[in-house]
Length: 186
Image (cartoon, rainbow, N blue to C red; front, side, top):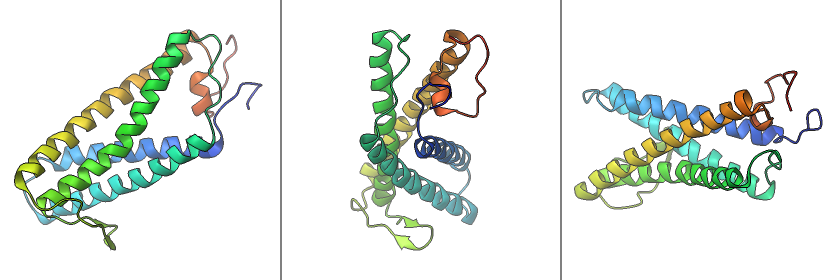
């Protein structure tokens, strides 16, 4: 609690921002590497991308389990009921996409016949056999889910900023305690 306003705990906040940083890194690397010509450097970037994806899956899985055991603080009472519903649904979709996207990447890698070796040490089992047609489908699914996540994250951030600057409530400060409480807040 800060100034009597409920907020997320330190672990929940840390996991939120860690997942965000990992997702941004995976997106940036994915967008950069995809159009590079085949080379040892591109293969290295693909490995890093897979490592980040596997790490996202592990951290997000832990985060989802933590969230189930530690419910979110109640939202401000000034929010209309319908916004509570939309926020809950969008958060659920964020969790689903953050967990499903690494799996689609792993499935895609398996279908291409290229093993995933986490951090260069642990070879993950192939989830499906090598199949060129399936690989193309999984690639498109992986890319589509990533664009869905991008749009959802942009909406999520936009709504958090709307709450902070226009509604002037403490929704954003619950997950970003580094923001100073401004005078004149309701």
